[in-house]
Image (cartoon, rainbow, N blue to C red; front, side, top):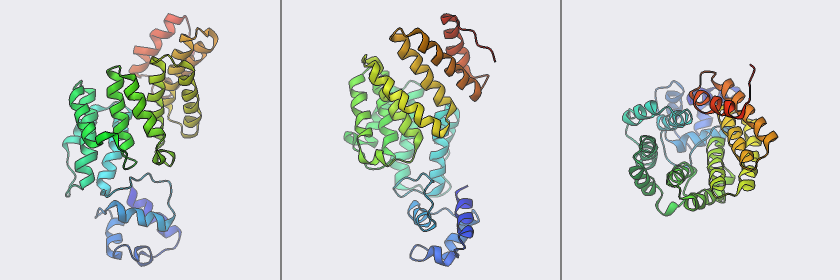
Length: 283
């Protein structure tokens, strides 16, 4: 939990509550936070992190309460694993305290849009996403999540150029170069590769995917690695490079198997493809 991180770092550096809270808040606020009794605004939490030199906690540069930040983390995990029952539950459960402006205008609508997208209500999802980021303007790190979701709407509708334009806008934005959330960086680049694939820019697609392999090896998202390897299989299959595409298909299988041997993705996608290519896997 976040309050445990703050308390541990403070004690490790032998910093008193009074010193940490100077020009930030009252020491009693920190005391109650460390005991798990109080949520604080993201502004206060960020200032604590700066004083403690904590750099590896992914924060959003806006005013949001920590229970809402935790909801964002849970939502991302649910989306990563396609667990939309958990996402629906999260949408319908409200924070215990008054919602922040950010939660009301961005985070909650975005979760709803992602949910609608995955139950097939595409137009409703698109409308919500465009309302969150009018004119696809990027004002914070969070907006990359919104625009990536909007790009997926265009991809589903086979509007490749619109999706490509949005994704390139994300990648070329100065915020994106400073992003600390490897998940959204990989999603944006993966979806851009998808656009290149369907626009027959196969070598551009491969360049992006190979960059993602490098990024992912440093961060070990095994399920995502499986998706990247499978995508590379499709690319080299399209180029009729038999030796390479067979290797990537095997790597995709092993990645998905390590993540979850009972994965539906394996049974529905990988195993039928292995049989089609005449490849036998021995575990």
